[in-house]
Length: 119
Image (tube, rainbow, N blue to C red; front, side, top):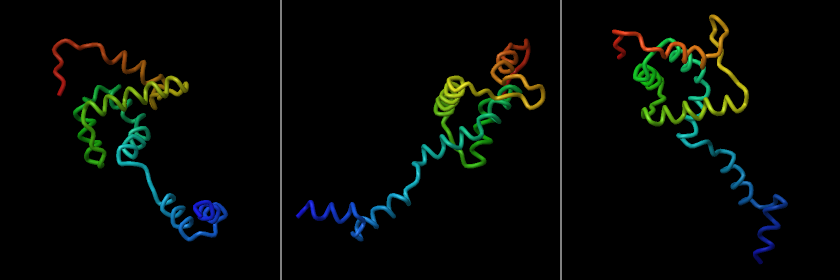
């Protein structure tokens, strides 16, 4: 009896099978996965801001203004993961002004300037 049920579902004659297909097609990614995808999309702009010495606090505030609320630890986790993925895949974020890789610009800009107080 159970095998008859499954054969009906497999060959598509079952309304239940259609209902399951519709339900599965309607599913979307979790909120966490949506945030991760959005972070990956805006990653080049985040790197550009960091290369300009914009503070993490300011970046998080701006992301929150657009609905992407991240805890600082989660931000760092996503940042490190996206940097690692792009490095592994040979992708680089390039400066729109000079064309140099953002990672090199961030390293150059990470030199401490005496007397400078960041936010």
